[in-house]
Image (cartoon, rainbow over all chains, first blue to last red; front, top):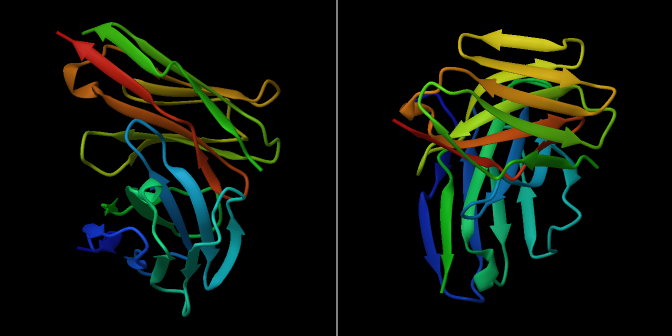
Length: 114
Length: 109
């Protein structure tokens, strides 16, 4: 499968625990996005990378969230001290270059905080 | 940053009717406007997109129009079919790709 892949697909964690998600973009895609989606809502922008550089973070993003893309290939999203409100689908998307090309989405990681 | 508003939030049509979904955006620097379709339990997938140097684009039963002056763009689906039932998202892209909240389209036969 040469599409965007995310791991794990599902994660159940206790409140207060840290979780880390991984995204492998389509090979040679320079741009990588992270979104959060709750039921009935559109993908909410969290952050994006151009190669290894994190260029923008949502102003609404808590300091408990951090993302990395150390070699410009895969990316990780970490949530520290999880809260029940963090329960959502976390989507990763990649695009070849720039902001005016199609973004391809992964299947997402569904996080449930209990 | 960019803000994208989408209307309506739900839309019900009869098979064969047309459906129109409208979006407005705030960032005049945005130059790319894709539309995604998301079926239940699946990832969003691109159905059509338009760039700011074009006013209209059509692909079979789907068309998108863009009015840069008014900062709005619309998705038009003609001859709707039950398989068109899904959630549709518009997006605007200046730097980051920002999505609207979605429109749930229901096509009844």
